[in-house]
Length: 292
Length: 328
Figure (tube, rainbow over the protein chains, first blue to last red):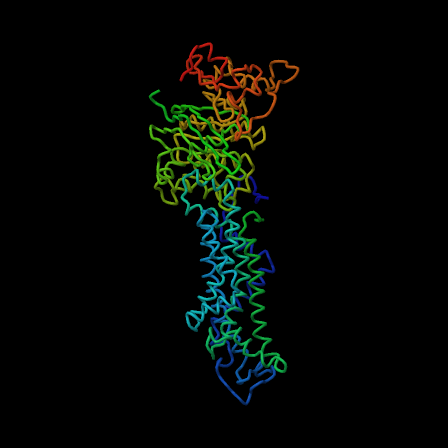
């Protein structure tokens, strides 16, 4: 199980980061996901250079064009190049997906860890609060928050963040409950560690696996949720391209111009797929017990 | 008695559950001098571990409650200490070796990080210095320090217990609690770990409370012995008086159930019956239902601690009559 070394030869020390990287690279599917993600991030960063047309260039004479060499993904009802819009859309969608999810995950993890660790009335208060949030469908909750805050990118992200808190809180609380019963937590107490130290250094890293899985699943949901807000006019304002918004806007033309929904949809699917396989690989790589 | 380190008086710990009060520890008293080792012996469920947790103020509350008594450590009552004081105290002045090294180490931190953690918590050292000291501790327990960056699952059981010992001794505590440190290990490793503990204890001059149910372990490293039954210490004294001049019927029973290499015994004589349910202790002497010498009075009157020779205490009605009056 351990790395065998020849006698007398000092074992080469490797940093933890390098170790994780090496294990991650062994998982082909994870590497594939990572490449797609890296590609998407590059697309988002260099959208100005890569995109063949500006995202808001309208050309009515070329409206509803089937994919061709001039417009590989076709054009929409205003004659805008869909490829360019998908590329620019990566910017917004990835931003929304990652930022809003991180916000929700951070809040949810802290609440869940605190509730699970301390238990008692604090647990009851926090968990009943998340139950209330959970009993409201995510979309409706996000709409309600976005309506209150007003339309816009930042507000949409806040709305999406808040609506993803309860899932994280539940997942983290459940795992915390299992981990805190283990003897090493008592051992940490016995060496004089404070509660905060026990939560963040001993318990939290041990519940990372479900958090990573939940996050990779959640990014996709967040992108779609933000899209619904955009569709209702509460999120991204046109003409800014956003995959979900493009999808919603194109739904009326689905019968004849399938490519208008197909490509933004494909982009969302690819992102979510890449995140999932990458997340799985990352979870395995972070677990030292699977080290080999 | 001037160098008394720890003095426990009438420590009583109950677990208050929905099904009733579980009387885990009932008026336990003992003293430990500096550098001395006390062996706390008893069957499973006698309240040994709860006593240990009580000393560290780590009894899970709820449901556990320290109902009464006092724990004087260097003259300071630990039961009245603030949370902050307790945190500074645990790991620095008093530390604990846990029963099962498999679960007492955090699976996702390297052993080096875990040893360095206790050092960083208590000694004002930089990270680099703490790691240096951690490496030293690791060498001290017989593990090459290049294994610092490995994770607990890469170590064998005995090695893990060595790591746990290294963590416990890293800040050079005055007092060490070892809660059945060898129970989870196989016999060959047990001897190694015991030797290591005895050696390090001498080196650092650490006083120790050795919790065990193995009377053999006690002879190897303890100076004094206390036999625990149903949350009470039924007999206590130095090693010689307990082993040579055994008094309490329960202690006799424990020795009777030990196989011996020198004497030819046809059949071991186990103690009949089971440990009483601590939520429903028998009246009078808690041992009377299993005691071969039980008298009628044992059912109604609880015995008190009686000193039958200097330093040798017995809690049994058989001996109370011999010395006339009990100690209290």
